[in-house]
Length: 503
Image (cartoon, rainbow, N blue to C red):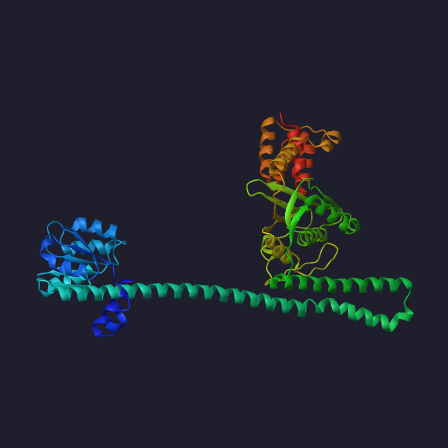
C-alpha cells in the first residue's frame, strides 16, 4: 500500500487529481495526532483544525506518541522533530516499523530548513513537512491533501484486493472448466471406443447367423444365441453406465435420502447376485448386523453396494469369498461399509487410477468378464452425493476391500450400536470352538496377536502366523487358521479365535 500511496502522492504533486474530485471524500471526524513537546505553541493551529471538523489528539513526547498512535489509529500525524528523548526521526521510523501504524501518513513540523534534514525526514517515512512558524491555512491544506491521498490509496488497495479475489475465482473456474472439458473428452472417447467394441461381435455374430443358420445344429444355434446375448448385455451395461454418469455430472440425478435398514439392503444384494456367485463357486455372504439404519438415497446405495459386490465377484476366482460388512465409526458417527473379496487384488499404481474419468482403467475378470471402466467412478460420485467417502485397500494376489462411508440415521441409537459391537467382540466364535481346538503359543505371544487384531492389520497377522509356524510345529494348525482368516479379511473370526485362547 505504501507504493500506491506514493504513486498517488506524485500524482497530486503533478496536478493529476483535481480538487473537486478530491472533495468527494468526506473527511469529517478524522483524528489528527499532534506529537510536540510544546503543544501550547500550536494552540491556534490545533483550534483551526478542530473548527474544520477534525478530532485533535495531543502527545508531548515520542514514546507516548507511539502508544497513542497504536491505540487511537489517527488518520494523520503531525510530528515535531526536535523533542527530548527519542526525536521525531526515530519516532517516525518506529511508527513505520509497526504494522498497525505504518500506513498512517506523517507530516513533519520543523524549524530546520537544511536540505539534509528534509531528506532524512522523507527517508524515515514522512510524506510531507511544514516549517515553523506554522501557517494554519497551509497546515490545513496539507492535512486534507494527505488524508485524501490515504483515502484514495485505501480505496485503490481495496479495489486491487477485490480484483485479485476475482482473478483467483476466475482461475479456479477456468481450472474447473478444463477439468470438465477433460471429462467431456473422455466421455466421448469412451462412447467412440468402448461402445464400438461390443458392437463388433454383435454385428459379426448376427451376420454369421444370417448366412449359415440353415447349416447350424441346435447346440451351435444355442451357443451363438448366448454369445449374442452377452454382446448385447455388454452394450446395454455400457450405455446404462454412461447415462448414469451423465445424469450425475449434470445434477439431474434424483436425490431423496430416507431412513434405510442397511442389513436389508445388503441381504437383497446377496440374493440378487447369488446366481452369479454360485456360477463361479464363490461364497457370497452379508455380515451386516440388524439394527443399523442409515440416511441415504435408496437407489444410490443399492447401486453402489450392487456395483461393488459385482466387481468383487468379477475379480474373485473359483472357490473364493466375497463378504459385505458394516462397522460403526463412533468418532464421526458414520457407518463404514466394506465389500471384501479374496480375489486377484490391485496394485497401488492401479488403485490411483480407479476413480479418475480421465484415466480409463478396465480389466477382464477371472472368468474374462468385461467392464465399462465407469463403475467405480459412478460409485464415487454417488457416495460423495450422500456425504460420504470411498477408498480401496488391496494386495496383489490376496484380495481387495472397497470401503465407503454413509451417514447414520439420526433415529439410530449410537449407544445401542456401540453396545452391540462390544457384545459381538466379547462373544467367542461358536464355529471355532465347536469344530477346532488348537495348541496355541505363550500368553505373551497371544497378547501380541491381540494387539494386531485390535489394529486390524491383516498383513502383520499373516506375518506373525508365518513366524509361529517356523517357531514350533505344534503351532502350525493355529497359525494356518490365522492365515486363512486373515486372507479373507475375517476380522471378527480372528478376534474371536484369539480371545478364545487369551489367559
